[in-house]
Amino acid sequence: MSQSITPELRQWIVEQARDGHSPESVLTAMQAAGWQADVAIRALEETLERHLRHQARALAPNPVPDLDLTGGPTCIDAGDRHVEVIATLGSPRVVVLGGLLSDDECDGLIQAARPRMARSLTVQTQTGGEELNPDRTSQGMFFQRGESELISRIEARIARLVQWPVDHGEGLQVLHYRPGAEYKPHYDYFDPEEPGTPTILKRGGQRVGTLVMYLNQPEQGGGTTFPDVGLEVAPVRGNAVFFSYDRPHPATRTLHGGAPVVRGEKWVATKWLRERIFN
Image 1 (tube, rainbow, N blue to C red):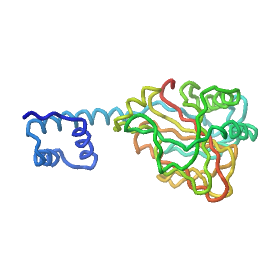
Image 2 (tube, rainbow, N blue to C red):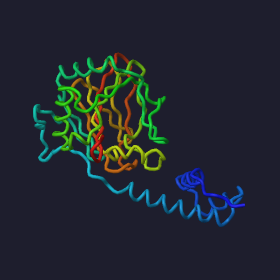
Image 3 (cartoon, one colour):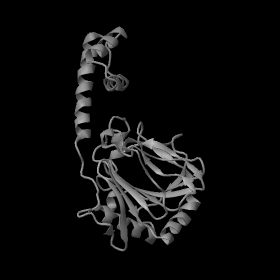
Image 4 (cartoon, rainbow, N blue to C red):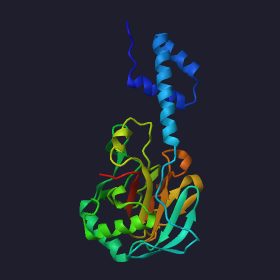
C-alpha cells in the first residue's frame, strides 16, 4: 500500500526540526509510527530542504523605513509639522517622538473612530484571515488609506518622517483600551513558517515597520513595552514610538506589547508599513 506525503506530515517534520531533534531521530520516529522507510526518507529530505531555503529567505534583511537622524537632531521637519526626537535605540531600531500629532488631530481621530469600534482582531497566520485573540483585549477599527483630509494629512506626515511611501502603508488603525485591557508581547511581522503567510504577503509583502501614536494619556499603565531590551515607552498624548524590523525573525528583538491599563483609558493609532504597495 503506497503512502502519500501530506502537508500535516511536512508540518510535523518542521516542528521537530524547530524543537532541535536530529534528522536521524525524526526518521526513527516516523518509521516507528508506520511510515515506509523510502517514503520517510523522501519526506524528510524534501521538507528539510524546503524549510532551509525558506529560512534563508526569511533571514535576508529587507530595506526598512527609518528617520534621518544624521547629526543627532532634536527635532525633524515632517512637512507640515516639526516633530521632537525624544529617545533613540539602535538595536532594536526604536525612536520615541514628541508632538507627532496635535491635540485637535488626536481628538479628531478618536471622534471619527468611536462609532466604528469593535472587538480587535489579529491576523490569523494559519489561514491568512483574522481572528479573536485572547492576548488582545482592546477594541479597534481601521480607516481606509486617505479616506478623509485628516487621515491623508497624517499619512503624508508619517511618510515624510520615516521616508517610506504612503501607498506602502496599511490603513490607520485606532485602538481603545479600557482598564485591564492589554496586548500581550508579540511580533508585528508575519511568521514565514505559518501556512497562511503567503496569502497575507500578496497584499504588499512583509511588514517592516510600526508607528504607534498615543491619542490620549491614561492615568496609569498602558505603556508600550519591549521585553527583550527592558524598554517601556510612556503613552503621552500626541507622542509616538516608531520601530522597524528588517527580517521576520526574533533576532530583530522587536517583541513588544501594550501593558495593561490600570486607571483611565487609552486610545492609540497604529500605522503598519509594508515592503511594497499595500492594496
